[in-house]
Length: 329
Image (cartoon, rainbow, N blue to C red; front, side, top):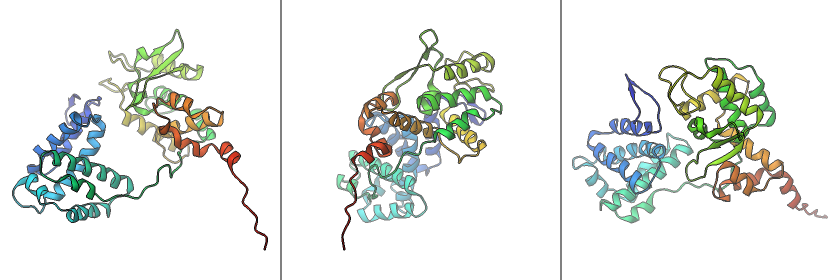
């Protein structure tokens, strides 16, 4: 559990539980015990990660409050027993009018999970699960939005300023060089860097696997400079820590904030750390690496997770394209 500092929370991997409980605390009082039970169910029955539970609970709190708002007495159990498919659709449509597609998708997932939770308790029938409105989406319809090589060069070469320039520089070098996730960079420990063997290992993320890379001279120099000249003296086992007291592990959210600020400072639109991951995969594809190798280097266990990158392999796409037939009038 994160340590409390006055009104602020020191980030830790367990902080998601704090945020979850705070969000439940803003729900209607009569719904809070049910939402706490739902959070435990997500962890034990569905084995969701704490961060995912936080996201799903944020949507579920709104959903449960909306269903029970006009239900009168009886609590969520009675309200959901009276819920019909038409009522469920009205709730979803009302939410969708004020939110974009990503938020609607999150609400859709949360509603289905909560209805499965309620069905196990006999509050609703399993058929209500199928009544959650569908969102028309097309698999692999988009393109990965990675940074161009010139943009990455500008981000790395521009002067580094701010309170922790060496730390920020080392973080961006790791993101750009290895395509690591922000959570993997946040979780990087001192023991994960083998200076003798010149390797760095990023921990498994989600359902993926740990990845070991060769430590490039540029990345090694950036990290070493931070460790020698700027990292505070602390017992924390992680490489990147807060510059101000307490010197605890730097959170993934802080890494997103520094990347956003860095790209804007370089004259680029604000970008997320994942843009470096997309650029890393696209760069490997241009060099002729097969999707299996890219999946391994990104820490994915399945080729399906990297199939989206086949859409940016323009050389292969042109090779299999056929000429448009000419029609003679």
